[in-house]
Length: 254
Figure 1 (cartoon, rainbow, N blue to C red):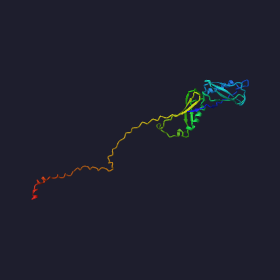
Figure 2: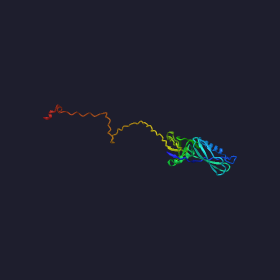
Figure 3: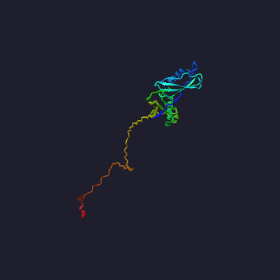
Figure 4: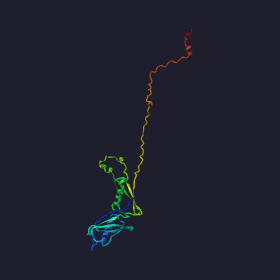
């Protein structure tokens, strides 16, 4: 978490013809104009502006008014006369309870330069001021900018692709701003992680083919087709008794 010190911010405003009849600045007009300028730019918590009386017109002369918030806290408003005709230039210092959003966003961008490079901060407020209270928390969007994204071709130059091929957009990181009880500002970067879903496995039907060949690579001998005219079977072997019983077999022993 980072701590942001309150620092001065400039809110210029030139007021014309603020010299009163007694050759002094029109204090009431100055007070109303400064208060109205702060309120219109988002500082709704400002209650009043108090300026000193009897200020004589003098080019380059400076004086100080005090802004009072609804909480009762006061903050200085420096006023400088631009000329002797009553044209002035004023600036208000940052105060606890009233934020200058443009300055705040610039502080964030500078603080993140070393970490992520160039970045833009969007706090969602079109006004310069934001009234805050102790304990209040709000978020700003962090939009990264780098050389790669800056050099990307325009959409018309990119090759056409189907929606299914496009990756899901990554959520932007955010800056969480917390107003401490003391009125100081703490902020930190919140990294948003995309929820990566595990793809559902696709079942593919497979056909198993049985190989009838021998694993050694030698093919088994092919069986010959049976002969349509088989040869006669050889005569069965005769026993000794069959031989003696043949006619004339006894003559061989005479």
